[in-house]
Image (cartoon, rainbow over all chains, first blue to last red; front, side, top):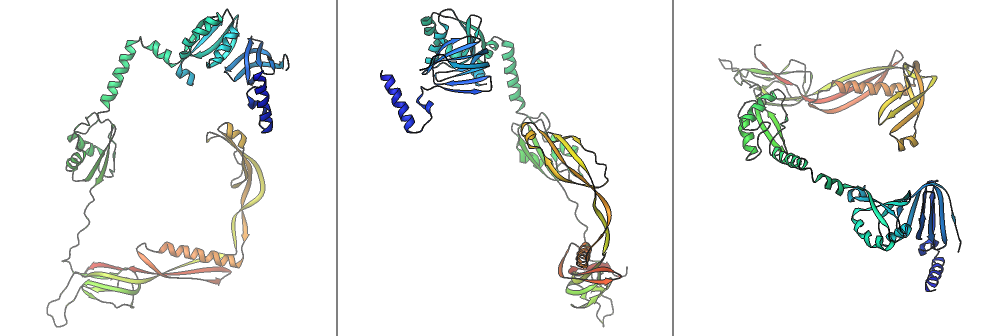
Length: 95
Length: 385
């Protein structure tokens, strides 16, 4: 409950200051370069890693990245850099 | 690159909760990369020094962690540690290197024009400087001084040690100039005609005065200073400074019509390809004389690869009759006359005056230039010869 309030307060502050939305460190931000690289920032956890699908939990729900020969070229607390033959990505469940 | 220097391991996480294992690693700020699923296990790369930190996570997630490969500099060095022969070889090579750098191996000799370099090399060898000689206890200035005495043709030797190189700079002895025999009676004669501007007889008597015009061969300073009432002639070695104003004339004729290269109107495309500055292809022009115009170099290709493609147009040039105005003729004639006059000037004098004019003759413009120069015109000549 307290986390939810804090998040909302952060969002309001970000909106008030006209800052990018993802700066609150909760809203996921996805950057895709061509069809082979996808950078996902502000992730929560890794749910599943397979060769054809990578499921990553975010504040807005589970992001499912699909494709072939998928791997995470870089994985850290804040970001996951997915590479491979990406066919698409979607939110499995919205907030 | 940095990971290679630091050393990393490729690990395989199987059984238990492999995905949870990854999240725990993220939470513990592990550096993870190349995470992928291979068969039933997750494979990833971590820094070698982080491997020991995996133990509590492994226990918590009940996973099995297996090292697939070890890569990087620390592992490479560890593997080499058992190869004693290699380390002994490295130590010997280092010792050889240290030993060899205490000696002189290269002796480049510069400054020898007439003197053979072998003479200098022999002189240095006698003083203990040769390829392989030790640098210890070498006093360069003393060696240079002693080597200089080896041959009279060596005026000075400069030695400089730069690592294993001993730089040798030689200054050769210059032959002493011809001595003047002051006992021989001489006159000072004029080498060329002019008007005397200054005369300073150091020995003998002045035969001309300032402002007097002289011709080549005239006696300027007399060596015969016999008095009118003397019974014996008195001849001396006359010498001194004699300066005169000498005129240098030059003419140049320029006509209104002349032949010069001009565009004929024919053109052809031009292309040149260079790779890293080395020409690979160039259009061979079919014209004898041409001018390249509209030259353009492709920029996009040059930024990615060291390839430069230059295109342009070759315009043919042929000899054609050209006309120029009278003003242009006058200017051309005067410039050409001045150039010719300057070509006649000696190097050891001072320009006093310069006049340039023109005249029209037979349809041509004649440029005339006169330069007045003050210069030494005297030379000594033995009396009676």
